[in-house]
Image (cartoon, rainbow, N blue to C red):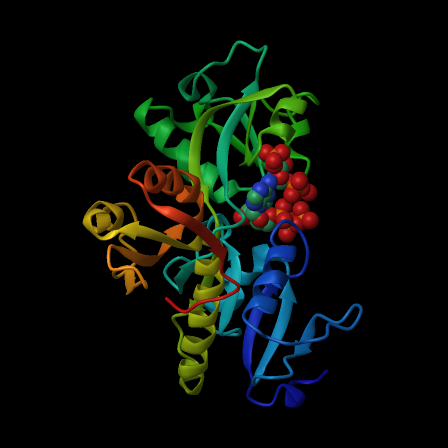
Length: 302
Ligand SMILES: Nc1ncnc2c1ncn2[C@@H]1O[C@H](COP(=O)(O)OP(=O)(O)OP(=O)(O)O)[C@@H](O)[C@H]1O
Ligand SMILES: O=P(O)(O)OC[C@H]1O[C@H](OP(=O)(O)OP(=O)(O)O)[C@H](O)[C@@H]1O
């Protein structure tokens, strides 16, 4: 594909593999961004919008977006800070996946128990900027200077093996479930950063003609994210309990209250956070609500 065939399209960068890839593909499908990715091609045209998707390593997306070569992108918040691009991109939406923490880890059975004890020693990481800033602050607090400062060394992967291989006294790496860390005999002694996937746009404004399409895509993606977080709760309740019931299900703006063919009862419908749905149902049942139903949302605009 050559530059002409992109023909003024909005460029949207998506991680080409790794932890964020599958969720990004689900998000694009939920937002009805239609494309067919041909094997080995990293640029593909969207069929139903003037957009081209550019599949890039997650770590390269902040600088492509920050420099304005690409208009929109999805990557990790951690990756933006590591690329030092926070001043050049704006984080439009948190996407609720790719959640993990960048943590300082040391051998569980070893003598080091605190970050202060690790300071001055060897730390291996793929996040040399974030780890360097973090230990820069610790070194300064402990007044470590020159050769006494913490030695940060970069490796591109398998960071968790560095201590066992004798390359490091501690590491800085991402932790989600903690399985990788525990399997390597490590434990966390500090958190440098909590992160999740984000939708970013360029602050460069190289293509102002795309502003309305960017708003449309952002609002569609926000709808898909919200549909994953919320359910609709419907129930019947006696009129004299409506006040108590709507305190339990206040909805986003206000619940919908409809009359029933029984003057003493009303039907209520409200959006409820999915993670709170079971608790909300228990509390509604406790005040005498009946026929409590929960519906998943396929999509929404809220
Ligand atoms: N275990 C995890 N759980 C959740 N999110 C993660 C996890 N590991 C990484 N991420 C997020 O995904 C981003 C990309 O990480 P990933 O390991 O997929 O990178 P990659 O180097 O592009 O892929 P690969 O490891 O396949 O080469 C990270 O910067 C982080 O934001
Ligand atoms: O706490 P956990 O759930 O075990 O996840 C943490 C691991 O996930 C990431 O690596 P990934 O598996 O994506 O592979 P990578 O090392 O090749 O980046 C990260 O670098 C950790 O190694």
